Length: 78
Image (tube, rainbow, N blue to C red):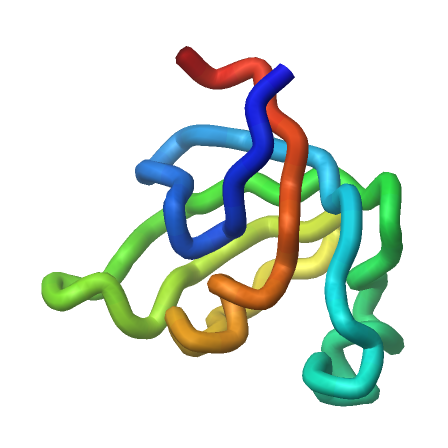
């Protein structure tokens, strides 16, 4: 298992949320299922990498790259 952030994933890669600073993540993101143990998949990245379109559990979200960099994941991606 490797550690990374959502911002470091490439299109099609997945990870499991391992940690994040609850004080820096918007409440709306938490309400939509941003919890430790939630699965995240990167569906698309904009040309310059910002924003990032993800699937988190059953929710489809677009988040800013700086926000994605705050959410730590564990992944089996090589």
